[in-house]
Length: 251
Image (tube, rainbow, N blue to C red):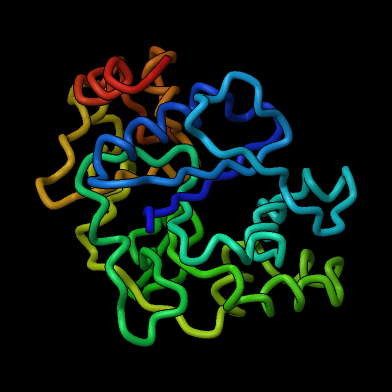
């Protein structure tokens, strides 16, 4: 059986080249067969090896698609995906920098495996919370996530900050990968308080498999903008190892 990776793209925030880059990077870091599935409303420009599926309809209105919180990602828990078996989900702004094999290793009793986001920039403790930028699960085993949301989606969207918090509270059981498997670009590699204007971000550590670009900046920002990053943690110019990555995997 091939290892299966799942992604999702809609609107204009990310394009086909972002999906292709993620697919090619995954292909380069997985031995053996790979099934790469993209849920999307626009499949134009995607590499032919990518399997395309429509984004399952979870009843959001056009206005609700734009609400803060990325609620459309709850389509990942639709019964329409039950046939996929166990998958590794990746956001399109993840950068693959090491062997992905550990993310496919079965863990006894694990239903929902993810990165424990104790590294959040606004975190005030080491408590781990479930993240949804990279996680492993079987859609067929977690139908209660979407079912609960759809009982009163208006109330849930006003109660929870985002889909990530909602998922963390409603999956049946979660476990966490080792902390060094996924590193935060902002938290672990960038500099603070203006130092980034004079120093380049660090290279990912040897044990890192994935670099997470959550929020601002996205990988493309470091390539396209002279000054990038959230205030006051600005950085200047391109990052050599990101340039190399784009040259290798980007259209």
